[in-house]
Length: 271
Image (cartoon, rainbow, N blue to C red; front, side):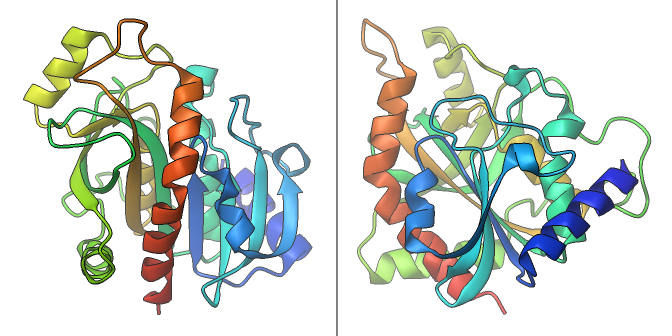
C-alpha cells in the first residue's frame, strides 16, 4: 500500500506541481464549490494511478487543483463510499495520498439527514465529533508505522482551533451555523424512522454514509480536520413518500454558498 500511495502522490505532484497544505472533499451536490476556485489543473480519477472511481450521481469524479482565498488547494469533486463496494483501505486511499503530498489540513463536507429537532432543512452543521456506526474501522489490519501509530487518538478528531475560526466568522457574518455530532452508517438505504429516532437518542445530530472513515485516517496521519454537514432532509419528520437522493442534491446546491463562505474563512486562517 505504501508504494501505491507514494506512486500516486508523485504522479499528482509531477502533473500539477502542487505545493499547498489543504485538501477539500466535496460531498453530494457540493461539487460546484470548485467554480469559486482559480483552477490550474483538473484530473479525472480514472486517469490517476491507483485511484478508485466514483459511481454516484452528484459526484463528478475529478481532482481539481487551484487557488481559493489565496491558498493553493486540491479538491475532490466526489468521494468514494463503502456501499459502492470499495474496501475501507480503497475509499480512504486519497487521504493517504494527500498526506504524502505534504498536505496537513483536510476539509470534509457531506450531505446529511438532520436528526436534531432544532435543525431545519438547508442548515449547515459544523461537525464537532462523530459516531462510527460502520461496523468496521479503516485502521484494522497491519499498521504501517510510516503512516501513523497503531492506536490513534480521536479525542480531537475535528480540530478545535479551526472550529473556533468558523464559529467566529459565522457569528460576525450572521450565518446560521449549527454544531453537532455526525453519525456515519454504511448505507445505501436511508434510515428507517426507528433508526432516525435511535440515532438522535444516542447523541447524533446529523447522519450520512461517508466522512467517518476519511476522518479516522486523517487523524491517523496527524492531519488537522474541519467538517461541515449540509442538512438536506429532516430524518425526524420523514414524508410519507420517504427521502430521495434528488432531494439531497437539490438542497445541497442551495446551501452551498454558506459552505463556501465557512470553508473560505477556515482556509484563510491556515498558516
